[in-house]
Image (cartoon, rainbow, N blue to C red; front, side, top):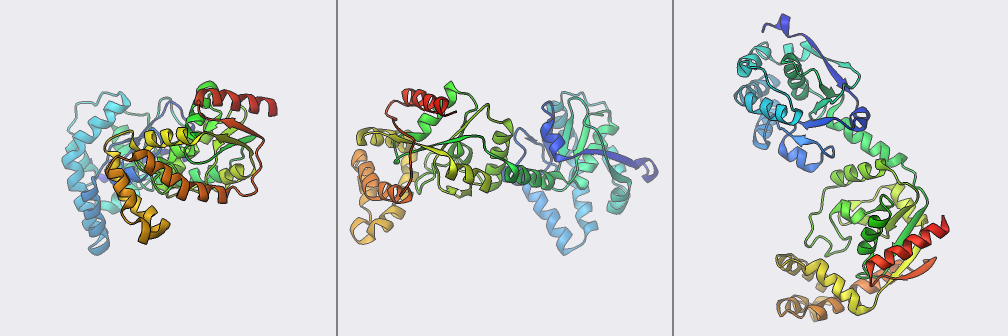
Length: 386
């Protein structure tokens, strides 16, 4: 394949179009590390380069030359192209024609980086039916070359994303900033009353009424909130949140009261305003029930004990290292769990929460001891107010 036959206009769609295409198969060509930091919800990772290869190519680009980086990328692509195309074909439900893929890639790239940049130009296009949407970091040669190769092999449903992941990220932030909340009701209450349990029970009887920020963040929004969960990055949280908000609410939005940060992620201004201005419902439960909820939350799995033991010293420092150093960990090690939880509630969580709620007004109080019954009460409160 000579440079004269390489020339192609690579069709691309914008990020908003990609997100609106419910039948799209989104293929993320970035490295696993890039994908793990954040990706389009539902996308599959078929990396053109692994993390080590990407780092090597980046180093060559910065310290040697773009041409040296291109040569290294070319060699690795030729070696793995059959596996790459096979993986894409599997996700796209498409049969790869019987051709020598390595030879075709070698011919496509024989003219060097300059030729490839000149010959593979982008063109805005309408999204086809059942599109196979491929993207890299910024819509550069990684995705353009793969889209051109696939279309040359007959996969005419293949399109790129103008601007790649960077444009998708911009779209996410734009949508989050522009979101306007419907009538919002906020579930508030002391740690351990079971706010999350009530919220999720409410979702079961009123689908799409709720916005579960802790579920999206993989964090319970406290110093011990990551125990037993998998906290996500800010970018992943933003992506998950955008996806949830874009699905809409059939009427009101019910949300659990949070601080501006849920673990290490920050709630966007639009959602924070809804939290601050919403109608507050106070959830309550006796101490015994709160201890039970937290015991299940933090120690429902044996492996959680190790993580909890690692975090408890932070609270001991805040309570006073001279008196408490090692004491909370000893309560855990000696299996005095109820005593540990009661101490955490009485001396740490409750004072913090009560201080943050000073001056707060509540439309009604609901006993959250039975999450399903409490959810039904909350639904009735919302129905009456709507």
